[in-house]
Amino acid sequence: MAKNYYEILGVDKKATQDEIKSQYRKLVKQYHPDLHPNDESVAAKFKEINEANEVLSDPQKRQQYDYELENPFASAGGSYSGGTGGFSDFSDIFGDIFSQFTGGGFSRSSAKRAGTDIGVTITLSFMDAAKGCSKEITYKRTESCSSCKGTGAKNGTNYKTCDTCKGTGQIQQAVGGGFLKTVRIVTCPKCGGSGKTIIEKCTDCGGKGYNTVNTTLNIDIPAGADTGSYITKRGYGNASTNGGESGNLIVEFKVLDHKLFKRKGFDLFVNVPISYKTACLSGKVQIPTLDKPYELSIPDGTQSGKEFMIRGKGINSKYGIGNLYVTVFIEVPTKLSRSQKTMISDFDSDLDVKQTSKMNEYKVNIQSLYGVNPYTDK
Ligand SMILES: [Zn+2]
Ligand SMILES: [Zn+2]
Image 1: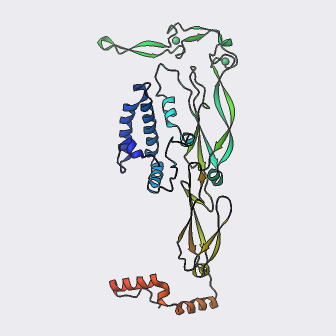
Image 2: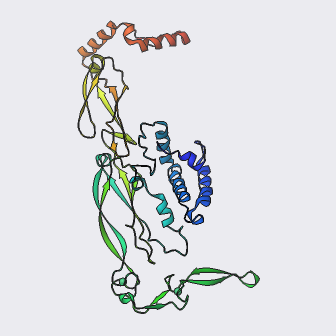
Image 3: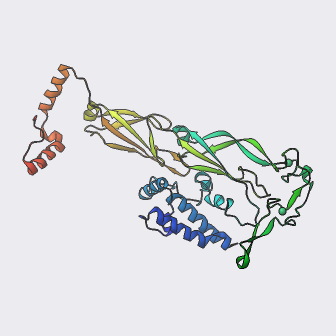
């Protein structure tokens, strides 16, 4: 079952975006892992809060989530239920918010800073997204310079302790004046917080400690990727500038439309025109599915707009299996010849009111209201 994100954030299902935002801020302050070091249950709760916020703060994702909450089958496996049981890859698809959250500017000032995240968008055909695929991407990222081991100093050794901060990477700075003078700790401007000054620069990276490289990566995209969903490849972002972990690569998807299919979550929808004859007398019609055509039997007396559900023929993802919904509509022939017009007219005159019970019911109802016959040509 999908987690109830409304319960996690402690907000009403009808909460406004402002209410969600303010409640989220309150909870972040309360459960931030920095305030509860070594408490894994708080860390888990914090992750859950971020996951809930990620969905509910985005009107589009929230709408989809609401839909799935009300249509349990559509959410079988729950495209928004996180991190349970066999869903170990789940955070890969819809994003590990937690790692981004602490990987960015939120980390403790004394800790090594992680490298920055890199965002890449891949455009997928409808079929590739629905069936899953593998894509090779090439992108630019910074990599720690191997010649100087990221120090920027020649051979990785040609540096000395920074004399401005005495190697601490931080300096005290006076703010204000007179009685109001206060002192705050800031990153050393001379060494940028590394605590070291380069004597001779590394020639391979020009003293930066990193190089920009083209990286080619194969991305396995599981079936069910949708526009706006993404995979986080941890550690494939930019190198840290002070010896911390590399940032993440976030691969976001954009899924193109299809001529036959529409989708919502893992469910697929197709509209199929049928003839008046098939609708009256029954018949068979070929329906598209993701792999091969499926023969659908149309019973006699099928009305325009009738929906058929073909169970399990939607997107088959490891996170859930969708259905295929087929809506048929009768195509009314146009540009009739004179003899065709006569045949249709004769046929219509031959019909008994019992054969068109809805029209008859409508006639009775409107007559009781206004005393008029809605079908004046009869
Ligand atoms: Zn310094
Ligand atoms: Zn270097």
